[in-house]
Length: 352
Image 1 (cartoon, rainbow, N blue to C red):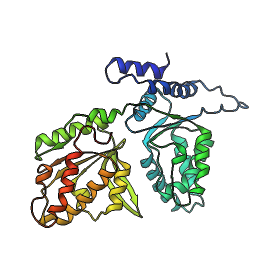
Image 2: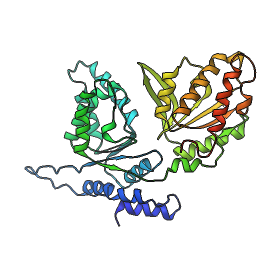
Image 3: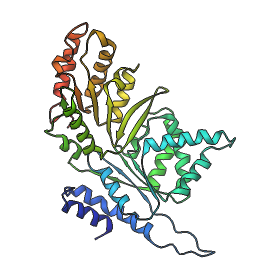
Image 4: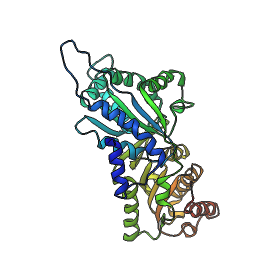
């Protein structure tokens, strides 16, 4: 049994995982990469460095275990230099590093930034590769070309097949060579499990907590820990040239206080972008709504509509049950639909 398969079996025996045929089918791909990277490199003056193994592009529906399997793989690499990072966070770092490089007067800001990445890692393990920003789309091809040329092995998860990356994006024809490069340098494997483990973990569990008190906060924190392992950090989403920040995000799960989302001048496009990035969203401390916070209430209605249409799983703490959140002032009639949706979104089969 291989190292990756051994670790997977150990976690099943410990009760941390449930054996899944689709997950078992992809383990040999991870082991192929691990075993090739683990081989000692024979060095000599005229000896050519061995070709790095092909990486892996693991795609499939949410909650199928893609990120878990990648973490398992990373745990088997020992002293092989590896970095495991959310793809969006990595690209933000790249943009920031390029900005600093330009200050030095270099003609090509990508080259020194790519060189710094190459100097620190042998394997890049990306979670959730998706490209929606034109600035990412325009540099990612040259960046990855430099990484592959230097022998960096890329392993990534995605909810999309490679051909759907940056779908309908501006100037997409300029992005197509990157898709071809991904197919050449990475084995593309679909994780076609029928099980959605993220939904299963929430199925039948309470997801709406009222009133907002110590018990509700403790329950929300426990759900966050279960879904994310208390990992992650802020997620910046670029919407029409502006940046919308989710204070906490990991592996498709977002978390934010009500006022972070509804007291700022955010609109439908912002909420649609949040809904696209998240599969589960935790909203904390929703207050009673009415005349005194009418603008916040309107934004909340728009946010819930976006989450509802995108089938995002909602977990929240609120000052009252849905039907009693908005009981006075202009907009009470319109809020009836929102209350109904909040109630529907509590169903254990919501989003399945």
